[in-house]
Amino acid sequence: MFVSGMAVLVLEIVGAALIRPFIGVGLFVWSSMIAVTLAALAAGYLLGGRWTRDLTGPDELERRFFRAAFLAGASMIVLPWLTAPVLRAVESLDLRVASLVSAFLFTPSLILLGSLTPMAVALCVRAGSSAGPAAARLFAISTMGGFVSALASGLWLLAVASAPAVLQGTGILLMVAAFGSPGGIGRMRGPRMLGLSLSLAVLGASAYPAFHRRPEQVVHQRQTVGGKVQVVDRNAERWLLVDGAIQGRERIADGAPTFEYVTLIGGLPARLAASPANALMIGLGAGTLADRLASAGVRVTAVDIHAFMPEIASRYFKFDAVRSRVVLMDGRVYLRRASEDFDLVVFDAYNAYDLPDHLMTLETFRLVRRRLRPGGVFALNVVTLAEPYRLAPKDARASDAIGTTLRAAGFESVESLMVGTPGWVGNLIFLASDRPVAPCLTDRIQAIHSNPGEILRDGSRKMTYWEIDSATAWRNEAYAVFGIKILLGI
Image (cartoon, rainbow, N blue to C red):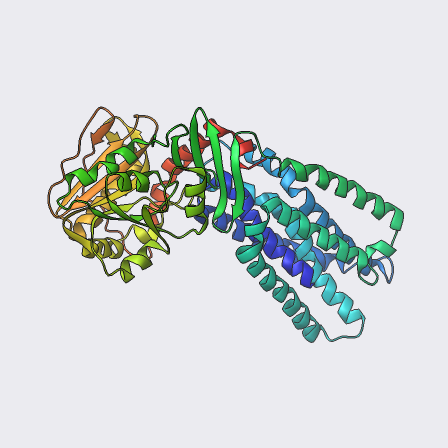
């Protein structure tokens, strides 16, 4: 039961890591995984209870228990092999629907694992134990297994091994436990079960290399606690992907940024009173914007919550870690603790396709305003779906809310600029200050009118829902550029 408890949490945590590079939005993935896990376990409890009845012999229940454990492990081995076809099938669906359908990929394993508990209780009762204490012991053992695997998966395993490898390793462990336990299936009808075991092991082994063979364009790939990180070369450009979301891009030859919003924000120091300016960046990414600011003589403090990001930026991109000060910390925590003031504060932080909600609130914007010197500028980047001289309806609602919240935080001047090609995913840049900021407008940098909207406060997740269309378009654009094999790392 300890191993089965481990397997349930591995399926939930590692399963989310497996499908998130394609779905992207963490809230939807986790909500779907938790809901499907609970539903599958409930179905498994009912199935296990039914299997405790109508037995043909005294040893039949024991055989059913170990068969279910063995098949649960076997199904976990083949799960990575089935991921790509399922995600291709849900490509055109709404992100919320796609995440829910994808989560059902894990239901056979979870149902089988759920069936083990009632059968284990029945076995204990038949051995002479009282039902209540036996159930208590089994639930405690199973829960402790989940506790161990939750800590191991989230804090260690995904940092040293890929999601497919963790799933398959857990499946093998479960199969070995089913074979090796006293009375396990290894001693029952051996030839038939041994043949099934060998067949599934071969199938799992054939799936494993596909998930660890790196396409030629992928310069670097690793699974981290913060998501799957990939560095990809394409058309003389180097791209940074985190859980499938494009997080950075520069020319391979000279490291020049190819995102227009980087050029726009990078030109702000020339408009500031202080020289050189003192800038704070929340979100490092590939380091292209930090490097551009540093090249202009700006003292840059780059804050990122992910420990792997500075290494990726300096090793695979042209980011010079010597010219910028890097701090590993949540951006809002740093704003609370910081003692120095800045001429420029930049928010360019995304968690895959997710805009961190706790950074898009009145409380955070007030912290920013307190850290800005007179005449300083707060630049905020939001990925959005561009239409000629206006935003898509849901994006407009998000834009209006951000603009209204910035003004409520005390910024007297708030400008919103659309950067990019209409009809494509672009960047909506907010420039907020205590005095007017005159941006350089071109045919690809358009001023966007902002209407009064809601004030965003701590605890709100509305931005996640308002940004669904943009996140979907962003995901589809990454899918069109790189294909599912690169996004899933297969």
